Length: 183
Length: 193
Image (cartoon, rainbow over all chains, first blue to last red; front, side, top):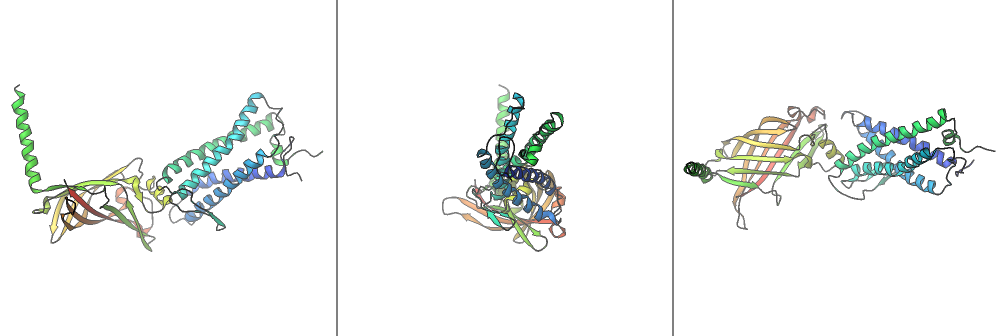
């Protein structure tokens, strides 16, 4: 079992973090769209936002870990990519970090602008760092816009991986799933 | 040159009207600068308790005729995005499309159309515009007090309450059968101009 990345493929840690975040980000997008349509007497009216906030905070920690892990691991071989593809993939891959960070922080600010902490499934709570009443509304607008931007980038990212997989017949998609080839 | 006497006459006439109204009813500015006024509301939560909120930003004026209070009138303008129920997520929801829709309807106004005195209480009728809907409402009001303040000014204070149905103003988010109506209270103190 290879935990670290090599220049031929991704280790277990990277792959696990990638797919947990993929499911988390897409799942929270769907949950977010759905929860704002709930009626006041829906049994999910309180629970759905609780889950959204809790998972969001866990993803924020995971994002930081993942960024550190990414910096501490070797770069994968991308010699098969065209110069344009190399540039575009670097922008998307590195762009995900500030984009997701801004998305998660804007969500955090919605809930904490009145000084209340965010409870994470009763396990622990994330305290409010700035108390700024009124900030929740602009933070909410930013959160909504960034969520759509994120999903657009996710679609672009997935489409590019399918292109490499189905058209170029490369291992770019499979290596995020099955790791480096074992010799 | 022929127009000059006419404009003088118009000015005199306008002045005469202004005098006749200001001679009887004094004009006041609601003291929001030092916050001796509040627009608050409460609504039942599930029918179990009262949820309290307020609008932090509003302004207004009134005239008050001590000899003939039925001559008085009041105008209040409320900044709807200043809604404050002491919970950021709820306030964000209240500012959104389900409730006040503040980007579309940034202000709510009350303009009185008449005052009826009954004993030491008064019924102020007027038009409340909220969420783009204007409706006639009645505010049950009473004078709290008035007179010279210790700093050289002259003040007059009132309290008034009314009850409005959210649906009447096109706010249709269903908060349950016990939460169809909102009690509103206006506690205002004015400084005489």
